[in-house]
Length: 220
Image (cartoon, rainbow, N blue to C red):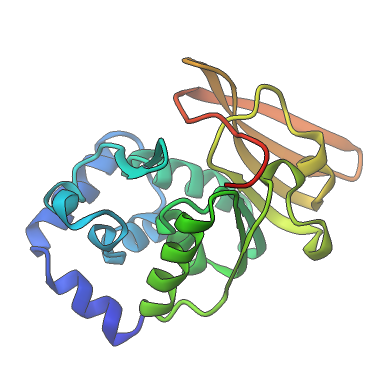
Protein backbone atom coordinates (compact mmCIF):
# COMPACT_ATOMS: atom_id res chain seq x y z
CA UNK A 1 0.00 0.00 0.00
CA UNK A 2 1.76 3.16 -1.14
CA UNK A 3 1.65 6.68 0.27
CA UNK A 4 -0.81 7.90 -2.36
CA UNK A 5 -3.32 5.30 -1.31
CA UNK A 6 -2.91 6.12 2.35
CA UNK A 7 -3.34 9.83 1.61
CA UNK A 8 -6.48 9.06 -0.34
CA UNK A 9 -7.91 7.20 2.61
CA UNK A 10 -7.08 10.11 4.86
CA UNK A 11 -9.60 12.22 2.96
CA UNK A 12 -12.39 10.20 4.55
CA UNK A 13 -12.96 9.63 8.24
CA UNK A 14 -11.74 6.46 9.87
CA UNK A 15 -15.11 6.13 11.55
CA UNK A 16 -16.92 6.16 8.19
CA UNK A 17 -14.77 3.35 6.85
CA UNK A 18 -15.12 1.34 10.05
CA UNK A 19 -18.90 1.64 9.83
CA UNK A 20 -18.81 0.19 6.34
CA UNK A 21 -16.67 -2.76 7.42
CA UNK A 22 -18.92 -3.42 10.42
CA UNK A 23 -21.93 -3.39 8.10
CA UNK A 24 -20.25 -5.93 5.82
CA UNK A 25 -19.55 -8.17 8.80
CA UNK A 26 -23.22 -8.08 9.80
CA UNK A 27 -24.17 -9.00 6.24
CA UNK A 28 -22.05 -12.13 6.45
CA UNK A 29 -18.63 -11.25 5.05
CA UNK A 30 -16.13 -13.13 7.23
CA UNK A 31 -12.74 -12.92 5.49
CA UNK A 32 -10.49 -10.65 7.53
CA UNK A 33 -8.21 -10.19 4.53
CA UNK A 34 -11.07 -9.05 2.31
CA UNK A 35 -12.50 -6.74 4.99
CA UNK A 36 -9.08 -5.18 5.56
CA UNK A 37 -8.64 -4.62 1.83
CA UNK A 38 -12.08 -3.01 1.53
CA UNK A 39 -11.29 -0.74 4.48
CA UNK A 40 -7.98 0.46 3.08
CA UNK A 41 -9.10 1.00 -0.54
CA UNK A 42 -10.25 4.61 -1.20
CA UNK A 43 -13.60 3.97 -2.89
CA UNK A 44 -14.32 7.69 -3.24
CA UNK A 45 -11.75 8.11 -6.03
CA UNK A 46 -13.68 5.64 -8.20
CA UNK A 47 -16.78 7.81 -8.52
CA UNK A 48 -17.41 11.34 -9.74
CA UNK A 49 -16.68 14.02 -7.16
CA UNK A 50 -20.38 14.83 -6.87
CA UNK A 51 -20.99 11.33 -5.50
CA UNK A 52 -17.88 11.03 -3.34
CA UNK A 53 -19.86 11.75 -0.16
CA UNK A 54 -21.78 8.50 -0.80
CA UNK A 55 -18.74 6.37 -1.58
CA UNK A 56 -18.76 4.47 1.72
CA UNK A 57 -22.45 3.68 1.73
CA UNK A 58 -23.26 0.06 1.02
CA UNK A 59 -24.92 0.85 -2.27
CA UNK A 60 -24.21 0.73 -6.00
CA UNK A 61 -23.35 4.06 -7.63
CA UNK A 62 -23.53 5.20 -11.27
CA UNK A 63 -20.28 5.63 -13.22
CA UNK A 64 -21.74 6.58 -16.60
CA UNK A 65 -22.57 4.66 -19.79
CA UNK A 66 -25.42 2.89 -17.93
CA UNK A 67 -22.82 1.15 -15.76
CA UNK A 68 -22.50 1.04 -11.98
CA UNK A 69 -19.92 0.68 -9.25
CA UNK A 70 -21.09 -2.42 -7.37
CA UNK A 71 -22.12 -2.06 -3.75
CA UNK A 72 -19.32 -2.88 -1.28
CA UNK A 73 -21.14 -6.00 -0.04
CA UNK A 74 -21.16 -7.52 -3.53
CA UNK A 75 -17.50 -6.61 -4.08
CA UNK A 76 -16.54 -8.15 -0.74
CA UNK A 77 -18.72 -11.25 -1.20
CA UNK A 78 -17.47 -12.02 -4.70
CA UNK A 79 -13.86 -11.45 -3.68
CA UNK A 80 -14.29 -13.69 -0.65
CA UNK A 81 -15.71 -16.45 -2.84
CA UNK A 82 -12.85 -16.16 -5.30
CA UNK A 83 -10.35 -16.52 -2.45
CA UNK A 84 -11.96 -19.70 -1.13
CA UNK A 85 -9.47 -22.52 -0.80
CA UNK A 86 -6.18 -20.91 -1.79
CA UNK A 87 -4.34 -17.69 -2.55
CA UNK A 88 -4.75 -16.06 -5.95
CA UNK A 89 -2.08 -16.04 -8.62
CA UNK A 90 -3.36 -14.83 -11.99
CA UNK A 91 -6.88 -13.40 -12.09
CA UNK A 92 -9.09 -12.35 -14.98
CA UNK A 93 -11.70 -9.67 -14.36
CA UNK A 94 -14.43 -9.27 -16.96
CA UNK A 95 -15.76 -5.72 -16.75
CA UNK A 96 -13.21 -3.23 -15.39
CA UNK A 97 -15.81 -0.49 -14.93
CA UNK A 98 -14.51 2.15 -12.56
CA UNK A 99 -11.52 0.01 -11.56
CA UNK A 100 -12.59 -0.37 -7.92
CA UNK A 101 -13.00 -4.14 -7.98
CA UNK A 102 -9.74 -4.31 -9.96
CA UNK A 103 -7.99 -2.40 -7.17
CA UNK A 104 -9.34 -4.77 -4.52
CA UNK A 105 -8.24 -7.82 -6.50
CA UNK A 106 -4.81 -6.32 -7.20
CA UNK A 107 -4.08 -6.24 -3.48
CA UNK A 108 -4.94 -9.92 -3.13
CA UNK A 109 -3.57 -11.50 -6.32
CA UNK A 110 -0.20 -11.68 -8.01
CA UNK A 111 -1.54 -10.34 -11.32
CA UNK A 112 -4.90 -9.03 -12.49
CA UNK A 113 -5.90 -8.99 -16.15
CA UNK A 114 -9.03 -6.92 -16.74
CA UNK A 115 -11.08 -6.37 -19.88
CA UNK A 116 -13.59 -3.57 -20.50
CA UNK A 117 -15.68 -2.89 -23.61
CA UNK A 118 -16.07 0.87 -22.99
CA UNK A 119 -12.80 2.66 -23.72
CA UNK A 120 -13.62 5.80 -21.69
CA UNK A 121 -14.15 3.72 -18.54
CA UNK A 122 -10.99 1.72 -19.19
CA UNK A 123 -8.87 4.86 -19.52
CA UNK A 124 -10.22 6.35 -16.27
CA UNK A 125 -9.68 3.07 -14.43
CA UNK A 126 -6.10 2.85 -15.68
CA UNK A 127 -5.33 6.32 -14.33
CA UNK A 128 -6.81 5.50 -10.92
CA UNK A 129 -4.89 2.24 -10.61
CA UNK A 130 -1.67 3.99 -11.59
CA UNK A 131 -2.35 6.71 -9.01
CA UNK A 132 -2.67 4.04 -6.33
CA UNK A 133 0.56 2.36 -7.39
CA UNK A 134 -1.15 -0.90 -8.34
CA UNK A 135 1.22 -1.91 -11.12
CA UNK A 136 0.30 -5.61 -11.19
CA UNK A 137 -2.82 -4.82 -13.25
CA UNK A 138 -3.10 -5.23 -17.01
CA UNK A 139 -6.05 -3.65 -18.78
CA UNK A 140 -7.35 -3.80 -22.33
CA UNK A 141 -10.45 -2.81 -24.27
CA UNK A 142 -12.14 -6.01 -25.44
CA UNK A 143 -15.39 -7.95 -25.58
CA UNK A 144 -15.73 -9.58 -22.17
CA UNK A 145 -17.45 -12.64 -23.62
CA UNK A 146 -14.08 -13.63 -25.08
CA UNK A 147 -12.06 -13.24 -21.90
CA UNK A 148 -8.32 -12.92 -22.48
CA UNK A 149 -7.28 -16.17 -24.11
CA UNK A 150 -3.67 -15.11 -24.69
CA UNK A 151 -3.11 -14.84 -20.93
CA UNK A 152 -5.03 -17.98 -19.92
CA UNK A 153 -5.19 -20.13 -17.89
CA UNK A 154 -6.29 -18.16 -14.83
CA UNK A 155 -6.44 -19.19 -11.18
CA UNK A 156 -9.51 -17.03 -10.75
CA UNK A 157 -12.05 -15.28 -12.96
CA UNK A 158 -14.47 -12.63 -11.75
CA UNK A 159 -17.30 -11.49 -14.00
CA UNK A 160 -18.89 -8.19 -12.98
CA UNK A 161 -21.77 -8.19 -15.47
CA UNK A 162 -24.37 -10.87 -16.10
CA UNK A 163 -24.34 -13.16 -19.15
CA UNK A 164 -27.64 -14.93 -19.86
CA UNK A 165 -26.06 -18.35 -19.25
CA UNK A 166 -22.87 -19.85 -17.85
CA UNK A 167 -20.01 -18.59 -20.07
CA UNK A 168 -18.30 -21.69 -21.46
CA UNK A 169 -15.55 -19.66 -23.15
CA UNK A 170 -14.51 -18.23 -19.79
CA UNK A 171 -14.74 -21.60 -18.04
CA UNK A 172 -12.32 -22.93 -20.65
CA UNK A 173 -9.84 -20.24 -19.58
CA UNK A 174 -9.79 -21.44 -15.97
CA UNK A 175 -6.83 -23.45 -14.76
CA UNK A 176 -7.51 -26.79 -13.09
CA UNK A 177 -8.21 -25.89 -9.47
CA UNK A 178 -9.31 -22.41 -10.55
CA UNK A 179 -12.53 -20.66 -9.53
CA UNK A 180 -14.90 -18.28 -11.26
CA UNK A 181 -17.51 -16.05 -9.65
CA UNK A 182 -20.20 -14.99 -12.11
CA UNK A 183 -23.76 -13.61 -12.02
CA UNK A 184 -25.99 -15.33 -14.57
CA UNK A 185 -29.47 -14.47 -15.84
CA UNK A 186 -31.61 -11.74 -17.33
CA UNK A 187 -33.12 -8.63 -15.73
CA UNK A 188 -33.78 -9.32 -12.03
CA UNK A 189 -33.77 -13.10 -12.41
CA UNK A 190 -30.07 -13.50 -11.74
CA UNK A 191 -28.10 -15.93 -9.61
CA UNK A 192 -24.51 -15.61 -8.43
CA UNK A 193 -22.53 -18.79 -9.09
CA UNK A 194 -19.20 -20.14 -7.90
CA UNK A 195 -17.63 -22.33 -10.58
CA UNK A 196 -14.73 -24.60 -9.63
CA UNK A 197 -12.73 -26.43 -12.28
CA UNK A 198 -11.29 -29.78 -11.23
CA UNK A 199 -9.45 -32.55 -13.04
CA UNK A 200 -12.72 -34.47 -13.07
CA UNK A 201 -14.83 -31.63 -14.49
CA UNK A 202 -16.65 -28.48 -13.44
CA UNK A 203 -18.51 -27.95 -10.16
CA UNK A 204 -21.30 -25.37 -10.08
CA UNK A 205 -22.60 -23.87 -6.83
CA UNK A 206 -25.46 -21.39 -6.44
CA UNK A 207 -24.67 -18.58 -3.99
CA UNK A 208 -27.44 -15.98 -3.87
CA UNK A 209 -29.75 -13.86 -5.98
CA UNK A 210 -28.13 -10.69 -7.37
CA UNK A 211 -28.79 -7.85 -9.80
CA UNK A 212 -26.08 -6.81 -12.29
CA UNK A 213 -26.01 -4.93 -15.55
CA UNK A 214 -26.00 -7.35 -18.51
CA UNK A 215 -22.75 -8.54 -20.06
CA UNK A 216 -22.84 -6.96 -23.52
CA UNK A 217 -20.77 -7.69 -26.59
CA UNK A 218 -18.94 -5.34 -28.90
CA UNK A 219 -16.85 -2.27 -28.09
CA UNK A 220 -17.88 1.28 -27.30
